[in-house]
Image 1 (tube, helix red, strand yellow):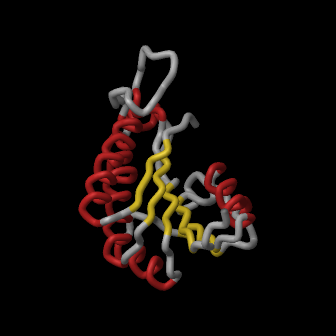
Image 2: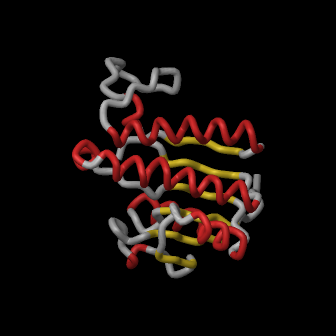
Length: 175
């Protein structure tokens, strides 16, 4: 089965997971555009075959322009603040970036007609589960602001997907 080539925006594409994803997507024949504010990522990890822009996904007007001009049809949203201890001492920063900023990205995507979004969530949404195996049916009970921002955006994403016909998925993994 061959997939139709897509034009994919990767937020946080200069980080470890973003750069690895970009390389895999390029190898699969997709066009990749990377958006990263370089606060934690490294410009030298961005593949030469990808277009790159320094900036924030929280800038809704700029995102609409980027999504429209680059003809993005899929977003791989990896960008986020992710240091758990820092999220405890600076929860406002995490909620503004990971939740409010992600909603701005989602609003921009809906406004210009992007219909696919893959969200890099986290196993932190499960909190301190007593289960020896984590699975999707477990309740979401994050124990820190980082996990809470990921769980909250998953709910937002589900609501937008239903309301706007967005094909969306959240991937939960350990980092």
